[in-house]
Length: 423
Ligand code: MN
Image 1 (cartoon, rainbow, N blue to C red):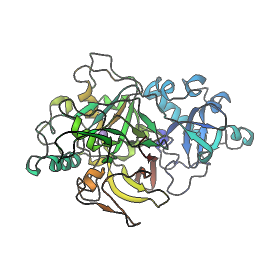
Image 2 (image 1 turned 90 degrees about the horizontal axis):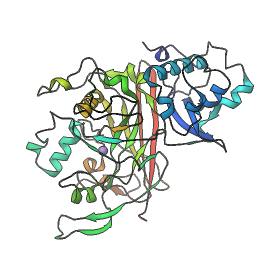
Image 3 (image 1 turned 60 degrees about the vertical axis):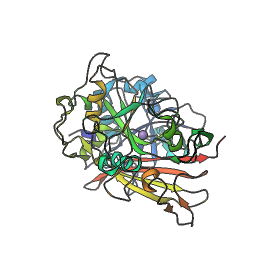
Image 4 (image 1 turned 180 degrees about the vertical axis):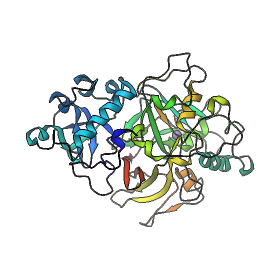
């Protein structure tokens, strides 16, 4: 077992009941308080531990890291040290925060320099994302979309159970939680129109996803096996992969997603390490037909992560519109990385990989408004008397997620994005 995952650990930092940020979690993010420069931090309870100042005070001397790894506005420099070094760092932080460890907790003067309130902090996009790939790996989501746009008898396309289908997205428009977006504009062709029209997207949608972030992995020409994949995954975050369904529907033939997708994708600010998620591994579905040998895997490679998406109208309350779970994925991250590299494509430090919309097997477990409102035919009733087929101007879409087992919770916080009217 990874030392920092010990379920018996308790921190001297107060961790409220149902906090996502227990001592068993210790996710990494980039934050600033007041006029300080952005630096690397770790969330614990309602606080952030400042790794830059912790390093300067000499508490991380026995780790392979340097000041510049933490005194930086992205996690990328720290991540360049790789999986084993980050594990060592997380274990060291775990020691320092353990209630039985006196090194730090008695030193009130230093505590003022290294522990800050999350409520006082500004959070930044944690990773300088180099490449972004989005998969399409939830069977229920692919099935629902197939039913909506084709035929329930042939909902899954012939390749779907053979290939973890994906496409290359755009990294420049990946934004951190709390960054508002404007409703996109573009070309669309309503089903009844003979020619396309230009205007605001009327079918703006979220996609409930997770993302994983990689370390430097294989050089160009090499491949990663499903077994090796874990070594190259730094951690996971919540990911709202925004979609303009009307723009997407007109443009996607024959080359796939473009302007209906690349206007924004929202990432939660804390990256939960794959190490911290190990205790929540679970079995995936039986894959039939049998996959090619390069996609076979051993052991439990899926993860039990409860996911929820909520809509908060302007001035109103949050309304839960769907609950799903990452364990419903058909293809796991190991298979996605093995597939992504089977042709020799290289995987680099700071790459971001979206899971694809994660829908569960029943109504109420869907990860997009496209499915929840069944392409607009079943509007979702809101408690304020309004209804939603897709997302309205000034709605805020919030996604939350956490794993929990034997009373230990490891959570992601949230990714929250407000939609402003078109510019
Ligand atoms: Mn997506």
